[in-house]
Image (cartoon, rainbow, N blue to C red):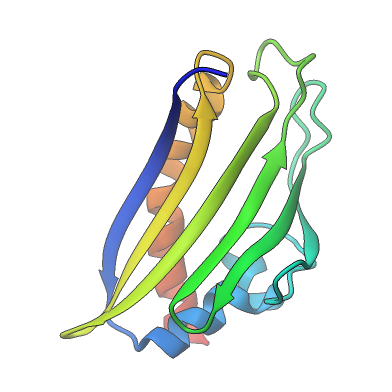
Length: 146
């Protein structure tokens, strides 16, 4: 495998880390800003995100919680796609890491989605790069309502 690339989003949200943590780790709230899921914040828990299928991809993202240190660090694997899907790129085997750091006026949220191998994952990288920024904004909205 060649070089891999990461999407990184940094944003300060005007909420305490424990409130944002709840938005990141409660399945019902997670569904509001990302996708339907069966997430549980427990290391080793395997879960799925479900979205609209694209080409040969069934729309399921297979994940496993790798790290969970409330309310500071959440890391999970993110695997999806299909190698028989030339229009949408090859299978993606990556990791999403959320880091919450208290700062004046709220919490610094850092999301890193790492493991995009080029050229196969270029489509996913290009599609998801602007999407993750919007998702972090949505986390702020869901946290405000929760």
